[in-house]
Amino acid sequence: MSSKRLSATKPNASARWLSIRPGQAARDRVTHQRDEGVEKIVASWPGRIDNQRALALGFVADKRFDDIIERFRQDDMEGRS
Image (tube, rainbow, N blue to C red):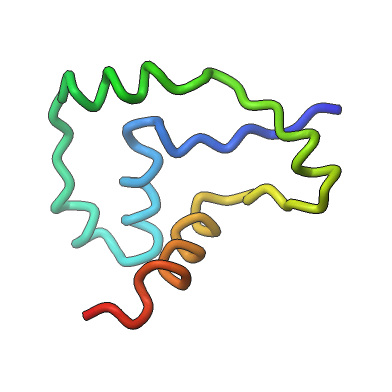
């Protein structure tokens, strides 16, 4: 079974989302600066994750970066001010 990979770890993935969803003004506020601490964390993550068992149990993989942001907003940001 082949599946399309969704990557939010590429430097421009979230920045592209900003220009589409909130708008170019939000995207224009983003700067890219190398951070060795962040690089070490990301480098420790597995390159691939086998999610077949989770899918067999009924979990559903997000298909778009937009879905990840929206779920975070709903689950973690609502009710906070």
